[in-house]
Length: 206
Image 1 (spheres, helix red, strand yellow):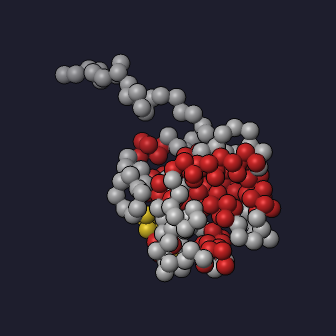
Image 2 (image 1 turned 45 degrees about the vertical axis):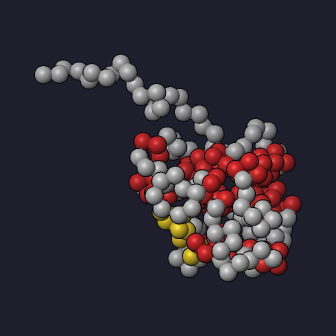
Image 3 (image 1 turned 135 degrees about the vertical axis):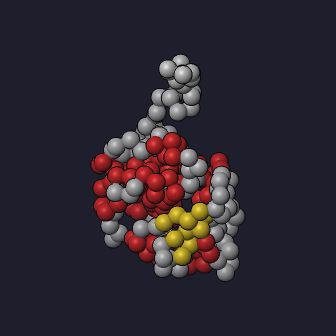
């Protein structure tokens, strides 16, 4: 009979490595959102992009390849089937975010690249962003909003995980929203940080 775990002295280097919390705080999120809204109160491209990423938790590649036709604003669902690492999945929007997307896609600037829903929701002059160009948008937005550290799209994904879990969603549903193949990955994204959940109800558009 085996009396002890034969691998106990060989921990998995991935799951036992220190977790670095790179999520934005509630105050940082609000600073960025208010800055983006003040910077561009009409089209609100960067405002919507940032808000979308901290609510949905989509990956950099998934955001870049998201087409408008994949979003059902009535059911608040997103079909994620381009740019994902694993199988296709459904992700969800909040009602307020769905309303903002509706407004955004009816703006005259957006309509210049409209292509019967086949266009990318967050395009770069009508074309898909590269990983670097999307990262640059996020990095510069946060820097100009007063965030002193470098912020990446993945940091927004981690922030979304906090928001979703502390907003009351079961950890299995968080896993589905983020598109993680195994639950252990999701658990690394969601240590308790309750104050971030407040952002779900604190963003009010003027």
